[in-house]
Image 1: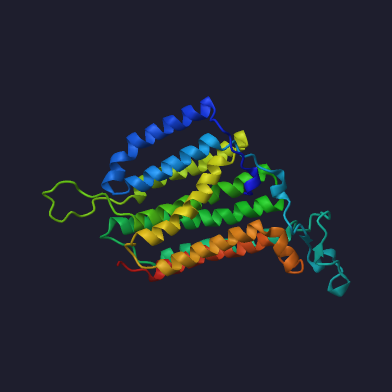
Image 2 (image 1 turned 135 degrees about the horizontal axis):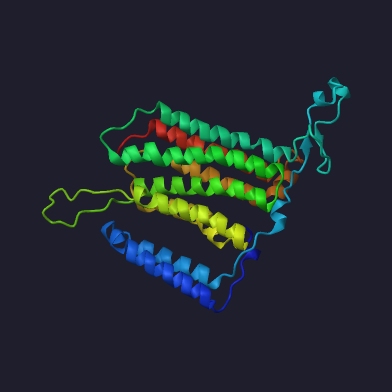
Length: 326
């Protein structure tokens, strides 16, 4: 999302003020005590203020149709598809305006989704290889609910992204973004659960002062609903603000979790590699045309984004296999 799409308004509209005010009051009433018990009231308040300012003073962000104009729009046809075979067949890569039943359009962006598929399947395979935890509710939730959702959503992203890049339009983009938001939310909730302190018992008679519950199970369902609604909201209003929050905010908060909190399990290096790969993927997405030019029209930035984004869940899958409780 380019910054020239963001327009600031000096005064918020009455409808936006009422909506933001209502949601802030609901969030405070619903989660204030929970945040206090987990000692995260201050960061939660800062996030709430930042989000309120964003929705109050940033005008609705439309989906630019130029987003669908990717650098590598070449089609692909196997030489054998013409029946001639050998070197007498047609060229492998065809100009963007050439269409046909045997031609894969936007070949680079379509076929690179195989890497994302491999990433999701590698995670599911890693989870199948792990023995089921029986004595740790948090471990059961992470390995039995949250990470499976992340890897299944990653597989769905590969399918949705293939469908979108076959014919890039707003209507097909929905099926790319829906599973993507679920994947964002799932891995973010996993990080929150592993890094943030559990809900402490205020009863002074409890000599252990142990954690009574983790945060992941409490926020996963609401966050998934918000993620899905962000795509539906964009579909019906052509306003990307909520989707931008869902897709960007976790990327900004996860490095803060690395720096400020101590995880309950090992695997920090694999998480850092996965996050770095996704940051690099976002850079490649923004430099789609430039990378296509720099590589001599061999691979575009968006295709490279798919490759790097697909390697990120592979790193998380490796984390699953080697992690231990700290």
